[in-house]
Structures are given as structure tokens and as C-alpha cells.
Amino acid sequence: MRVYLAKELLEANQNNAGENRSLLRASGVLMVNLIGSPGSGKTALLEHTLKKLSGYRTAVIEGDLYTDEDARRLSSWCNQIVQINTEGSCHLEAGYIGHLLAQENLLSAELLFIENIGNLVCPAEFDLGEDIRVVLLSVTEGNDKPRKYPLAFKVADAAVVTKTDLLPYCDFNLNQLNEDLRKINENLALFTVSTKTGEGLGDWCKWLEKLLQRKRSA
Ligand SMILES: Nc1nc2c(ncn2[C@@H]2O[C@H](COP(=O)(O)OP(=O)(O)O)[C@@H](O)[C@H]2O)c(=O)[nH]1
Ligand SMILES: [Mg+2]
Image 1 (cartoon, protein in one colour):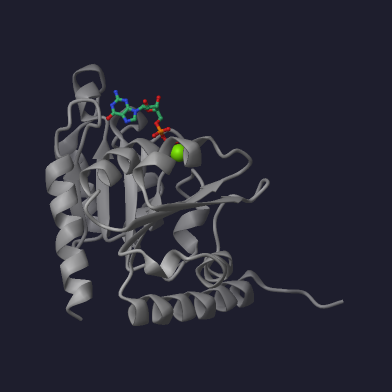
Image 2: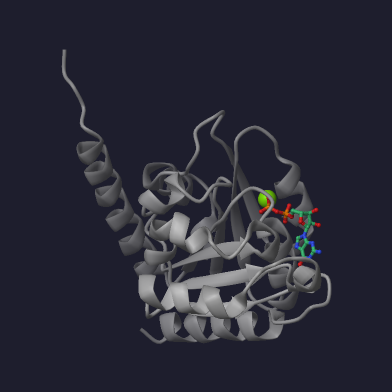
């Protein structure tokens, strides 16, 4: 009997991620991987981001355990959407993404978003070959989450604090969050947004556009 070590499987994932990254570089597609707890506002942020960036060719890989509800929410706002149902698995892997890049017409997009499976643990361990990894944290989850789930914030390029319209009703301490995040990842970009009021969405989309320009001119 052969015993597989998680380390070996992660190495295989890393190789697949490298292949995805080469494909994306050759095609000039900017791939953004969104991770966050169930209900942190990933789909809502995508809906509003896709609406604001409607001048670009956009595509979404929507990861869910079973349903296609989120894909249906997003389908009017992007040029292409592909649903992956993991049927219980708690994260997406680079091999799945590589398969979709090869089978679907995703490389014709300029901006390709991935909504990862909702949780702050496993998705942090699996590089998908993305250019940018973004972790969402809603104010209703509490500002202690980076201390409790540091890897998700350590491996991200940006953190988006969502549902800021609810700040008056929560004990969420943005200053403490900032302090904790600097200790975990001093290069992390930080955005605060509300899809209800529109606060912060402009800055977030401008940042994405800047990354897109940089990718195009690379
Ligand atoms: N008040 C408020 N609710 C939000 C905001 N963004 C998302 N929600 C709500 O939070 C719930 C979960 O959002 P969803 O985007 O489905 O989260 P996901 O599971 O991470 O994709 C939904 O009921 C949304 O309407 C926000 O900015 N403010
Ligand atoms: Mg969702």
C-alpha cells in the first residue's frame, strides 16, 4: 500500500499552479482568486465588481459544494461563467482550474475571477496559479479572524473588509484589524467596502484596473 503524504499532493498542486500561471501569462489574463467564509460577501462583491468593470471582457469560475445559485446570480454580469461543484470538498485545486482553462474559452477574458469554496482554512493552502489572491472578511465575523486564521491573510495580496454598512451594529475594531494584519503580512492591500451603500467599491475596482494595465504591459 502506498501512503501519500499531504506534502506530495501539495507539491503536485504547486506544479499545476505553475502551469496555470504560464498559460495566463501567455494569454495576458488577470486571474483573481477570492477566498472567505460562507456568507462573507464574495458573490455580492463579484456582482458589484462585474457591473462596475463591464467595459472589460470578464469571466468567472464559481466554486460551490453543490448548487449553481451563485453562478446564476452572476451570469448576467460577466461574459462567461463556469460552475464547479466539488460535492463536499472544501477547496478548489489548481488541477481543476487547469482543466477548465483548457476546456472552456476562459483565456479570451481579460479578467477572470474565481469564487473559491467558502471557508478560511483549506483554500488558503492551495495556490491555483492566480495573479492575485484576495481574502474577504465581513464585519459580522469579528476582527479576531486574522489572528485565528493567519495563513489566509499571510498568503493574500489584498484583504477586503465587507459589509461596512453594518459597522454601527458590530464590535468590529478596524484599528485593531489593521494592527494585526501588519504583523501577519505587511504588504497586504486593505479595502473596506459595502455593497449596500457602494462605499469603497470605487477604490477596489481602480486597484483591479491598475493590476490589469500592469499585466497587459508586462
Ligand atoms: N448589509 C450587508 N449585507 C451584505 C453585504 N454584502 C453581502 N451581504 C449579504 O450577506 C449575505 C451573504 O452574501 P454572499 O455574497 O452570498 O456571500 P458569500 O457566501 O461569501 O458568497 C447575503 O445575504 C448578502 O445580501 C454588504 O455589503 N452589506
Ligand atoms: Mg457565494
